[in-house]
Amino acid sequence: MFVFKRIVWIVGALLFAGTSLPAAAQAVYKCGWRSYSQQPCAPKRVVNTADAPVPAKSDRRAEENRVLAQSLRRLPGETSAQFATRRHRATLLQEDRLECSRLDTRIPFEKERMKNPNPEEVQQAGADLADATKRFRKLHC
View (cartoon, rainbow, N blue to C red):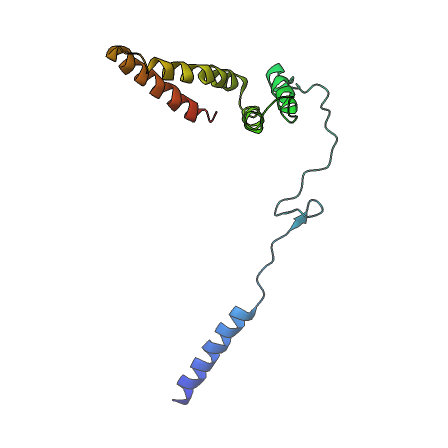
């Protein structure tokens, strides 16, 4: 019994010693002010970017910026609702703005067609009006 207790004690001591030994630390490299890596950092070198292609600014984006800048000012004689609509539409693409302005005239036209006494004309106007309002909502005009 004494030998068994001694073996259990030795095995326990070895297990405790094995778990308390510090693990081998990995190398850590400081690459910048707050960046660290497990691999050595690339050497700092100057890269010549003179030959790198630079994308030209598109005229479309410049036009959108111009329209957005104009939308920040209220025009003389403009109601607050008209100003809010124009300001909101300035964030849309130019094609969408043009389609919204076309829909602004088409929707009242289709509503007038609904007053026609001809039932076939009224039915066609109703379908066209539904399409126009659906597109109007989809574009977020």
